[in-house]
Amino acid sequence: MDKRPESGGWQAINAQPSSGKQTMASRILIAEDPLETRIAVLENEQLVELFIQPSGKKKLIGNIYIGRVSSVIPGLEAAFVDIGIGRNAFLHVRDFLPQPGHDWRDDIYGANGNGVEDADSEEIDPADVEGAVELEVPKESVPVPLNISDYLVEGQSVLVQMEKEPLGQKGCRVTANISLPGRYIVFFPNAAHVAISRRIEDDGERERLEKIGQELTQGENGIILRTAAEGAEFEDLQKEYNALKERWLTTKNDSENAEAPALIYEDAGILTQVIRDQLSPQTQSIFVEGEEAYEKVFSYVSQIMPEFQTRVRHYQEAIPLFRARGIESEIERLLQRRVWLKSGGYLVIDETEALTVIDVNTGRDRGGSNLEETALATNLEAIPEVARQLRLRDIGGIIIVDFIDMLSTRNQSVVMEQLQAALAEDRSHPTLFSMTELGLVQLTRKRVRKSLLRGLSQPCPYCKGEGVIFAKSTMVTRILRRLEELLLEDPRDSTTLHVHPTLSEEINTNWSDYLQDLAARYDTRVRVVAEPGIHLEGIRESFET
Image 1 (cartoon, one colour):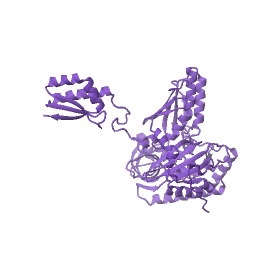
Image 2 (cartoon, one colour):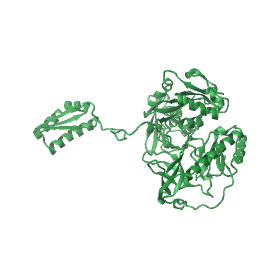
Image 3 (tube, rainbow, N blue to C red):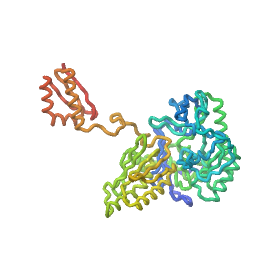
Image 4 (cartoon, helix red, strand yellow):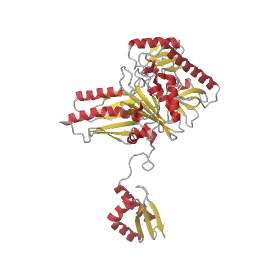
């Protein structure tokens, strides 16, 4: 039976979240038009995550390809694989394993036992999953050190999955450790283990899910039971496991009949993916703008959580949804380096290809009775905003936070504890390191795609992405020197330089004597004139003979 609610505006529904250990009330706003699909996730009415996909641009992460090995590079312990997207993908030897005898725990915890990813992050990766239950795995030895040449040769076909999109000058990264995510389960056809999401804390529930996992897999495949599996019935878990296994068998069969390179399996679109990963009992409502998007979302929610049908609302007000809820202005602020705090302090966020630096400043904040007290207060206020900006801007890789210097080791410990707690809400589960002797805090966060800033922007064609241009005084010097170079190279009856109006005014007001001296020395006429619309660093020449 179709239980669609009546269409309405923002205030049409305000369902109370179900009781439970999580109390963070959330909403999902979806706006789709001919230009792009945008999804905003709000927690306690504050924007915390944003997904934007331009029309015509498909998501690549999670796609499965039959690729052809273009080259094997022993020095990098990797191979480059042609997957048919115009740029070869990078496949590291550890992403080609596990082979029989490979210890799957290295994939779960990392070779050093300290994983930095999480099974419930948006792009599924089994690292950092606690409480895994090992099944029977062959104990044959694996060559150490691993050598890519032992496994791959040029021209060989290999089934791989997109793990990371191209970032800057780096190509995409792929893995042969295929995973197929569902709402309750992540299915690993090439592994043999059962793992439980570390967000499920109840020992009894973990034990129940472990038994179910072993009964489902029978040692043939690997699975991770996601957070949403908590409390799920055996029949629901079995149904999804069978569906994922069937999907894999179809994918494998398609790959055997395809000629490399080729796309074999396309992962779920952004609408399905976000609903699958974000929908929870704490979700009060899902507002959808756009008829087609509403039909798709309502149909999908009806399949996976029919009891939530009444929370899906078709937004049809005159004012666009994102503008009505202030999301448009939030997006504009995401392009700015500076983020203000209520006290008058602020953050400065600078992204580079190597890392991201977040600088905390007191600004206009003078609230404390002394410098140490002011520094602590501003740092503590900055912490939740730092955590929010990491999620909102989807910043990944190496991150350095430069908090305001504090002399007290106790205050430093308080800041680190508060930061750890704030980061716990992040689905990507950043890894936090200790504070350095210079007072810098280091952390890493999973990076699989461009950050939101890099996705919405491009390098400046004038400053070439450096973020700076020549100062006014520097440009005046360059213009006058260029003028003299032209007179030396090829004297004409008249030489004119066309420059930005601001620079023309500066030169003709304060450097007129210098222009007259040039004209007298080279027995010619020289002019510097304003040209509206020319760039501040632009210089255009014209001559008369």
